[in-house]
Image (cartoon, rainbow, N blue to C red):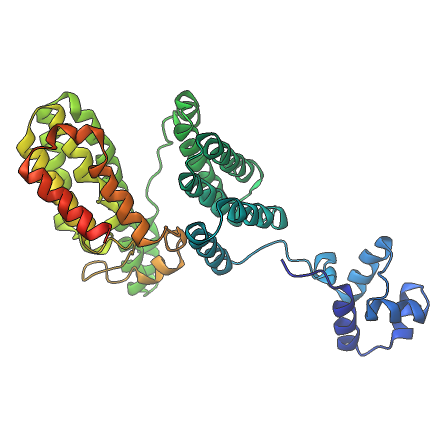
Length: 369
């Protein structure tokens, strides 16, 4: 937030109106000396005069004081990335305090609060103090609750509700997650076909195609996320697990998801491998762990981009909130993904398996070098 500077605003607006200090003083009902002191910073207008001054200059009181309660999306993104990088390079408590200071300064900037809550969630993994980690997670949850209750932006409210539920789940409050998200979603017809039709009938064919591409893309990514979760239900049914895995990889291949949004599919082979181990199917589990190592040791930058089929979505991606999801640094991601296999007790039964040892070596060489 910029420093409050009434003097600068009064000087600028007075000169824009082309009036003298005496003329301004006469209008407000103060002495010329008072206006002079305001403009030199020796004193400030009485608080009761602020609305009158703002009205005279046709500006808000916030603008008169130089107060900016909001941050742009671009600035929020830059701040998030700076603070996240600082977590790896500066004392933990110092970075958290800086985060809290920004929250205090922009407590009515709900897009910022949503991202600062996300930052606190991620930051909780940077401390080995479990009590401190839980406290920070609870702090993040309170930010999401504020956004959910106070914001008038429907999309922000939905995101905040989901993030609140994530915090509750991490904190072990699973009944709270059910309470927050348990109601079945309202049936909602997709708006893209109607909007695309309107574009087409007004001769805007490129916009029509772009709208449909974005809708298809969003629903494919959502379907893959649901399938990943559904895979865990297959732990009790080997045939169901086979079917889910087959269909999921079919979607990944047909739409080339590995190239256009690799982050979406990285965890899927790992989850499926755990399922096959539960059914004592070591060969299939190892096949999937090899696929996981392939995804993890490749280009796992959390990029999102179009391709030959999705050739009109780049502008939407740039403007969308996905562009501002602001993931952590790729090195941190890779190490975390490798740990999910190397230090996962669920795979301890494979420790002596030669194929598993090759997978572990590959992960170690690529992610911890």
